[in-house]
Image (cartoon, rainbow, N blue to C red; front, side, top):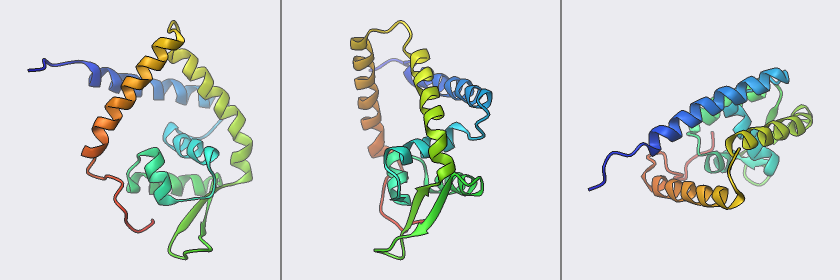
Length: 154
């Protein structure tokens, strides 16, 4: 029988503290988005003009959470929603020019955070650690009640 382990608790602490530190870095650069919104923008910087369900899969955010974050990003003119030309039931999320200008600063701050996370780690240690995190994520995904079940776009 496995004894109580601290991994989940440590991951939660790292998550919360990392968000606070990253939020402070964003404020120092006068960027008015939160880490949750940044996760969406980061996914769109990797591939822009995607359906909402694609963002659900790539960010692992619940549809209700994603919808609220998208509403705020749209009000701040960071993203725009458009109907798909191929399927009018689908909504496509696209970056605005304002957000594309923000990308370089945001990516530089992400690099700074990565350096903070991995200070004192070798490349091999980082690779091993990230492989273990992927295994944990793979263990959890099948138990997500939200799943990535197909449904209507928001």
